[in-house]
Length: 358
Image (cartoon, rainbow, N blue to C red; front, top):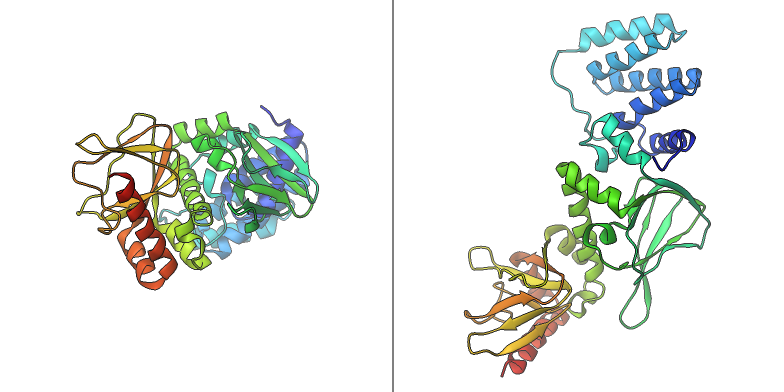
């Protein structure tokens, strides 16, 4: 394991501070505290969680942590018995979910306690000073980071050279997932804005997580796609002038498809019209008469509008690793109706493609 027992315990203490109601974190933490003979802390944590579970109507989980209190010989015997009686009375025997309104570490939510522990243990624990860059836009690396404490700013250098801050990330947030999932260069620079502690995971550990635990992998991939589309709306000219809320709307509603070199890129049809946008990579557009055109980042096509439709005999083939966003028709038409800048770029793209194909 990359983390020593002491560093793993320290990481779990920080994770519990960020996600105090996440039982996937609390149960292993209690065991680690017990193993390192920090019995008083283990007892206090077990009883605190039992009280919280009972207060939230999760009597079954409360009974489990009260049983742990007894195993640890917690001195508050009378309170533990009273809480156990109350939990047994209120427990209707129905199945309880660990999910709810509380803040959970969603990436490990579908893992067992031991599986989550094995994943966390693969990390490195690093500290970063304010103003220090953790990753830099354009660099090639495949590490993934989870913030234990502190804050970081995600900054993007726009095509005109001006910087913009996309967001500030806080404890419990993660970043660096683009490079791990899609093997891309860093899409933004991430800089610590305060003293920060991170868990750093290798690309290999993230790949294993995605392969071994599909639900956790699906959550991570969906997060990657949303952030990727959001970042693209700041650099693709058609979207750059749109309000931030509409950029976020695009990111949340769109999906991203991945293609390897030589793959045919499927084009949306009338049954599910969409606007497709190349986010990265290149593709070649060919028609039956042999005419060809190279498509690259920011180029649009699809069935959402005649302005971006391709000839019926057209074929698009990726010439390198490519990621293509599918933006729903409703969003495309909303932007066409509301924003003259968006409509201008769409029309210009269609005219340029039509001119290049003749």
